[in-house]
Image: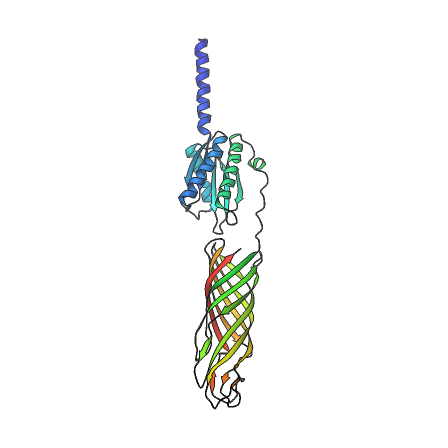
Length: 343
């Protein structure tokens, strides 16, 4: 009789231990759209940490990327009941590129959120941080302890840093009726503050413009501009904004050939001042590389024409008599397409 009672007690304890062992499980839901290698690394890291506290991992992948918090919590509660789990974790991947780890107990009465930085750090660092947090939170859930006490206070996210941008690409300019479109190479640099505004400088190189007439000459442009502006982010990768630009363009004219009746200096140069309003769009391909485009109307404050004069075929202001060889626009347009390297 005593043996039967002892046997019943042993069997009861074994059944209780099996039930407790069955309850030693954690459900982890990964965000959709991860690369297979990233998903595998995440599962391995989470499984290693969860196994250290004596729990079994149920690793799943979310089907919907834009589910609300209430819907996520409802799904988590169903999964906790289905797998008899002590808690459910899931990662919310925001369009900005940041990850947030949600931790919920099996009843749904308690939920904790921890930020995981991905945009400004490597994916491996984010996975390691998620695994460490999951291990500590799993241990707290299994021991029915406070998750906040175990994890400690949430650390504030790192403040965004300033950026140095180096830009290079193609530039085209509507210059004059006789030469409607000039090709060039645009280079520039700018400094972006964390709050959004930025300032920069740019230069456009273009091959000499050759004018063939009674006087043959070459015109070389050296436009340099400073600019400043701000941009707005739309999602994770798209930025649009505007810039104000103010610059000076040195124009160097070199006479290559002339008729005998005309006298001409070999070369001369003059400068014009211009101001522009630039519309900018950028698609950030990676954290350090972007593809951008600009369209800019520019107004020249002191433009002039290149005209024929018998005594001195030098550059004269608008309204002067004589044959006009070249008449640059007072209002012109410049388009730029290129890449930006962010450091």
